[in-house]
Image (tube, rainbow, N blue to C red):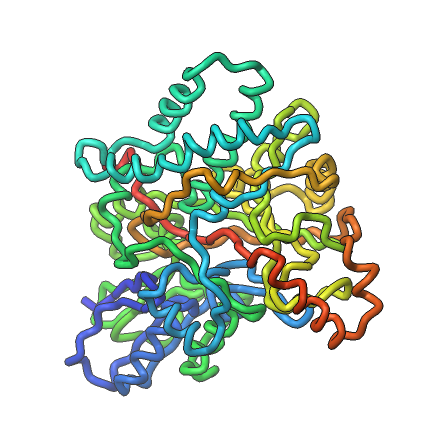
Length: 495
């Protein structure tokens, strides 16, 4: 029987099993031209294997790492941050000079600016909720150390803790509404980290250890992951990649492996057979096609593992404005809908917005070396919110988001007081790092408010702008933007 191997993307490396004793003239097919597939080719060619063919269903390389040009940089529709430093992505990004700063993962929640209607904000309530919520990660991590808790889902435990918090003293209806809005933001933060909340098993806190010791992310410059993708592609000659070739069936019953390919011209058996096949498909692809993709089928235990492992859903939406209207301290924005009766059900999933953080923005309005003044917000959705919003037409979504944000145009916001407790322990990730991103949507030209500095600065030359802004830069807080960990997780119903 021919050999068929699977490469899983963990810390970027293409991890595959291919005997070093295999003849160097062996024919090898690689399914997928994402980071795993490109890395596999680079390593194989380093080992003197040359008879290699990559089959890629799309018309581009990079897999989930995809971006589109915008001004001087690129909008990252897929991966955006580097998670931790003990991995190949970090080493490549550092060598290419892409890393611009380090950010604690918890900042997207712990340092968020809280936006709400003028009469809804209450610093005392904000600090009271943060005093309750910030220590929970350490608590849940301790609970995860006990095997008896491994099959327990995070959602029910948090619901119990939240109700206990509310019952500490009598709450008015207004307070309950405000706390519920903050609770939605907190749960959204967890969903954004891990793609799930309700059935995120406590086993994740104990069983996953990426060797980091701390939960930090690294922001990249305006080119970002595209530079890493191009670097990996530089080791792969163009003629090795068959774009627009979707592998439907891998038949490894004989001495060699045959592939059934779907192209624009139809479905057919590829004329060449291979000694080895390395499958680098994402977990999402395998969840959908594992039962039909291979002949003979994978063992039942492997199919059950593919089916049962948790799989997060994420959606990133770019909001492009004429001018920025938000606070310029670099924190994430939590837009709380304390009164929900006037908003679409889709907007219940919108709670976190992050400003695009290129070092040197392309906006004609104002250029700042530390990306304080920018005109693009990114909305992050996860779990069921990503699924529900993904199918909404762009025009309708633009109207809904504009209506959702309009009450916050007064820039009325509060941040948790700096004396509030801040947690710094590691955000435990899940058992794998493979994730297929939801397609992004672009939202353009929604309403905006002119920044207060623009009338002054816009009349200056670029050099004069930089000199002026260099003087005020020490007065402004450094940019801090939330993390982007995209992980699978142990679902509590599989343990």
